Image (cartoon, rainbow, N blue to C red; front, side, top):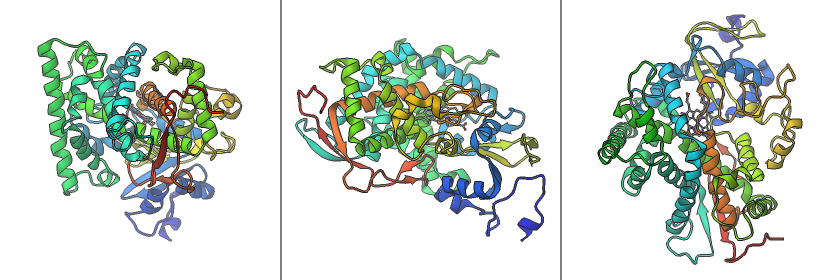
Length: 488
Ligand code: HEM
């Protein structure tokens, strides 16, 4: 009753909860989209809920995205919202463990590595990694190149393929080689210390936290050893992010990034793209498994763009595969890996167009996935239909000004899987190169179906990214050797 009687009229309405500190943790945690929708019906686009002692004000819709993601630096802080979770994993001095202006420069250094020139070299490398993976992995040929069909568990295969291809391209041969030794286990230990539980209790004294701390040091030391080795050999020839940081990692004020910071940045970059991209390729393959017509059209596109005998992919080929890129775009529309983006409020923050003020110390939250499945912006939003993007202009109706903005640009777009504003993702282009190459390889080599008639799995929100719930299996069949013509 007190929640209703003593409500401050200048504060957004608060979602009712029975248990004081715990708040709405269960209903939000189980299905954030249902939670947002149920409360939007009661309160409109802006409301506050209690999440394990934190007061979160959600702002839904494109306006809400703009409010949170484009808020002034003096008003909100991402580092105050994320630092406790990320620093034990990435290490000190980078990303959220430094002032925001440092993060902005670190992102700029990383971005300068992610060029078209680099991507041209990455596509054939990814092709090689995928082939090698298929050959060895028990999910695919398991050492027997004549295997014609098998059941593969995607949530095993896609994280492995993602980390092998990302480490080889973004961090070079020497780092990739470490993944054939113990490096993958160390990254697993980092992962197990990067959970919703650690979001609430970053240093909870359980084995996973101790293993995370030990792994952070070992992984960071390994990157430092690689950096020293490259210096000794004088070999900076690959277009990778480590080399770019070594060349360009000098801040505007003349301070040079230390080897430790460059090392920790590598963990941040690899982790930033790992679960997001692995989840995306898994969702895409599951949707394709349920849509044989789309798979045929994608196979035809491979032939149309590359020619009958399907020579190895190039970066330029990928740019011409419109349907493939729409498929990735559609996957991210229905399954954006990050459902909630937070900022901590640094000074009382008025919400434009309302009489609400969010006080200092509370959090604001954007949920870019909400407009992405809103029929106001996307016709029949729960249907996976990549071809909708060919008609995108008709379907994306933007803010009050009626201005049609480009998809994925500007915080008022209803389509923001990569965020917006100063914390926007730097990995979008790389993700498209990596996902595009991997998916094209699957389309060329296999046809596949879901193992039963249960359809595409439902989302599972229990980890840091939105994953498909288990089982995430497909049954693949190799296309007949020599099959060059699209199946009729
Ligand atoms: C930031 C999504 C891949 C590195 C973000 C944000 C989102 C996002 C939504 C904004 C976070 C916020 O505002 O709080 C995705 C998706 C990906 C992906 C959907 C793949 C499908 C990658 C990759 C990399 C990467 C491959 C590295 C190469 C980063 C970095 C930031 C970021 C450094 C900036 C964090 C900040 O400024 O606070 N990403 N990402 N991401 N992402 Fe990605």
